[in-house]
Length: 420
Image (cartoon, rainbow, N blue to C red; front, side, top):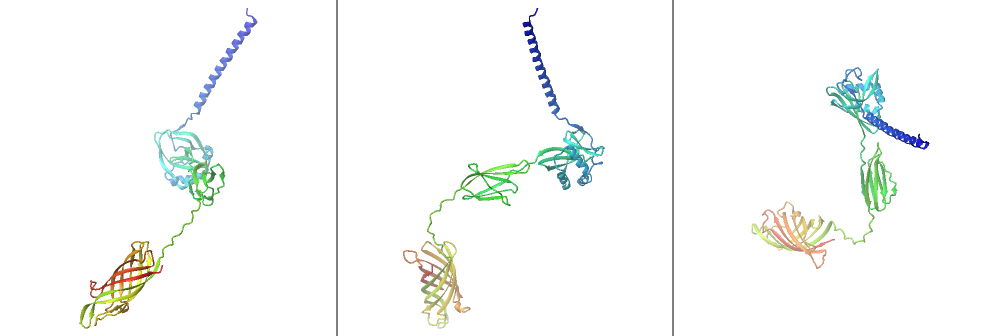
């Protein structure tokens, strides 16, 4: 006979076992349901092995891009029905624009090609059949196009045999990182980016700085010296952000004023006087022949040095001279005027040399007295310090009817004063 106490203990043990078995059974059922549910999530694609049937959007298919464009114009209502039935998230206008522009290519699609949906005509209405796989014996030919719409790039296929529009792939539209150009100066900054972007400038302590962009996508401002961050966002679609750091330098303290060295003058006029000896071959009426004639000479000249650089100057000068002691019977003019041009080079702070070309006796043009001359000279400053007064020595050679020979020359010495 079982006592009440024993009965209660046995009943409790049986009840505990029963509840434990229920928990195990529930767990098994839950796991089984989960596994079945997971298997159902593995999407199955329905096979398509024929195109161009009575479900074709365009009976007889299309052969050219122009024929496909005509289908989208003439049967726009059916295309709209297909897109609506498929739940396509793009805009039909974007698809129509791609078709109208002819922005598609002809490609081949092998058996096993899968589509999120493919269109069909049923009961004279355009529908989208979800998850279709091409299982024909050979590849089919179609037009492939990429439609960018609603921040997605939709890869779509249109078989030439039936025009049954299909969605093959859908990816987010790529958004380029914004271009940022930062130019800094002394407590100034210029930042430019593409128009339409949004920009924020942040100080080193995290304080944002009001930085509205102008009509050119730029922001120029004076800001204190320090380190900064500029964050630029392309707001299109999901957006893309680029971040740049930059530093702004402080304005340096002004340097002490320095004594300015005056710029050398471009034009330096001068006056010069000279004396010397001229040796020429001249016709002598007493001798009835050309003979050597040597005479003294003195004269003056006025000119201007034209500075070319630190070492070289060009010059032009005009002068007159008088001959003293011509031989009796010499057929020659005692007073003459000349012009010279040439180049002068500084040797150091005090010395110089030069060479030039002159036309002699220009007051007796086309006479036996005029001739071309070539000359060399050199000299230097007078005194211990740099001065405006200079000495010079000059050797001049004449090229007249008798030619440029050692018998046709002039050696002179003189003083030149520069009007600096």
